[in-house]
Image (cartoon, rainbow, N blue to C red; front, side, top):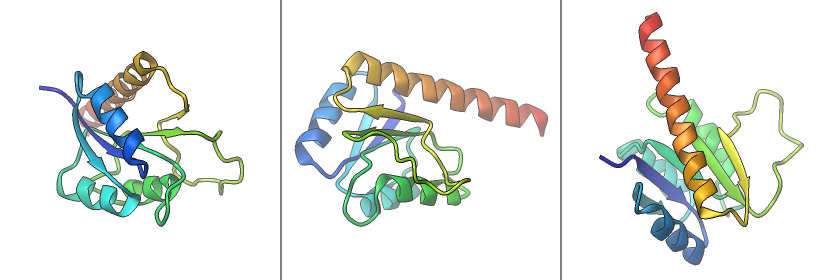
Length: 132
């Protein structure tokens, strides 16, 4: 069974490009903005969230904060793909993505990063279960 990835991207072209690139190894669902992405994640939690950063309304950082604030989604790995470098003006303690990739991203690298954050998340979940 393929891991489920939720792609949150405001550009239709980029959203569809990512969906097509990833669909060979992942079960892809898409959302056009942060609001729709959060709603979808709450109703059908993915295994990993792939989000743009600069979006109208809820941007990637706010989406990450809201996801991490939801008990059912707090464990969800978040990967940002953006045309801009990571912000340096973030408040200390603000939730950060598990990976931050700057466009253009080579497809094999993106796929490898998604698998890596999924593997780390599985390891953390297994470790937490073993300690309980």
